[in-house]
Image 1 (tube, helix red, strand yellow):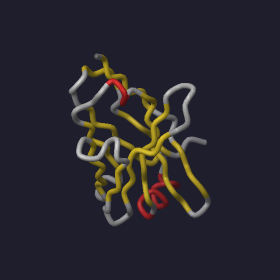
Image 2 (cartoon, helix red, strand yellow):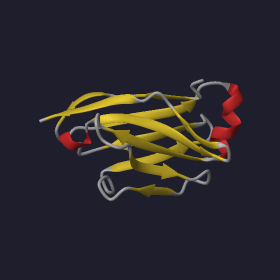
Image 3 (cartoon, rainbow, N blue to C red):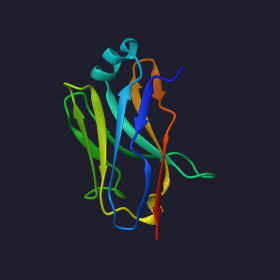
Length: 119
């Protein structure tokens, strides 16, 4: 059962930008989404999933060192969405990006969206 929906992935050149969005897939999960930390992780085939950024229900962001000063996570409480603005993208940012909700019952993942940065 998919509870999070990601959008906004695609192909971009080195130095370009993309914006990813994450939203609850249905009204049942909407309340949980609004009250929990929401984050982004990414994974390259054959490697472990890597944490990228997260934001508290009150809007406090945290970033992995590899993306700090290039990526910005934000949440729109009126739309109940979380976005990841990615600037100055590098080929090493190429991965499948997953949205995740850190809930009391465990992590809830989206299906992922591919981001490819060409040289």
